[in-house]
Length: 388
Length: 97
Image (cartoon, rainbow over all chains, first blue to last red; front, top):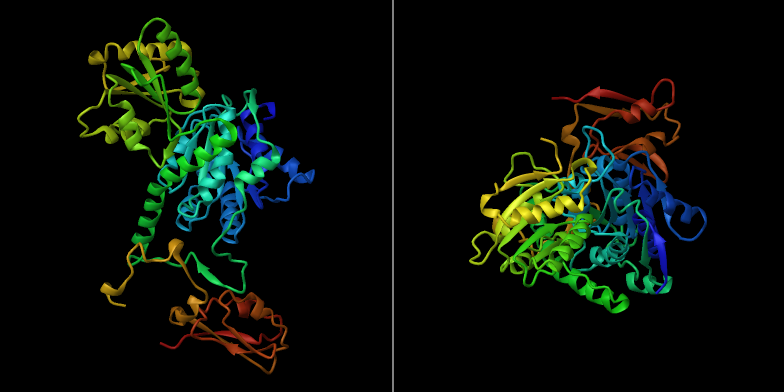
């Protein structure tokens, strides 16, 4: 398999080139700009057959994506932070219309105060819009997840829009050596979109997006919820097929040295990589530390997670987004709900960290593991990396 | 349709996909506060009203404007505004109560 040095953004643009979507509608925003900028050069150079729609805002970008997807096209876009926020109005329309739009979202702190660096506040605010959400730990995963996202979104039992995230600058701008599928292999893996209806099919006209009042709206929302629940098994099937092609294994969650762990961290994105380094260090000193990385945040893998954490004594859940007085950050509230009522469950504490791109160091993670060793003395809700 | 006959979420078509032309069955003419009146004597059959109407409520036959579909015309007045003849060949009048 060919290898190349790629930043996270370049890796995602490369995946888009191989996917060769019918339509891309996007508006540039730091730190996701390069994805669509590089892709625009692929369009200009004739390397793809894509209709590229340069729009005047992300609201328009997502609206154009909805229209094109409803016409039966395979559609992709990319954005970040305020750009994603400007799409919020359209995101639940995409899922309600069951349009398998595929998005790269480079995690960046929501303004304000204005900031261009990584946290997960943008993606977490979009968690209840019926989009599948897949987090990446590095550029390799960003590439692999985006290729798989096409199949996941368009699976006939799923048909839900899907966003694949990377951490702004940490992954998006960091150069890594990654393995890339052969073009033909990628093309074969993603296949062609087979839309059941198309707004451009004048021989079989349909109405899409009609007014849905109290007598029907609820049933349609339940369809989305059920499709999301069903998506888990299909994500796993597609991961299995991807593994057969590449040797790279994917699941809803990744358990790193967790089987016999006594203390563990739950993290998403690049912080999982930092945590792995600390787990290795602690293991060499005889400390039974582990990591549970959440790859798929929607659908939320509650069962797998509860099972994986059942035998761990103390767990710290790291949230790179705050929920301001809620019972923990968004990841913590999900996990504590998933563990509620289980007879075997770890003691759980929460950290909000890394907001606005605050650096997450090996020392920070060492500190969390050290706290876990005296969990009985720890408050439930904590912060690290912030000045008192 | 009675409550008992409405389909549950499993039977309901996914994604709110319906047969085409459902708006035809939904008469929106009752929303009107003003109605357009066509004056055929000065009309030049430019069809600008037909292009501009957002509700396909300008009726035609053999490629010529023949009046309005008052079941669907909401009385927005775009046709009268866009009509290029002097005097106007479409005028807006208060809907009778």
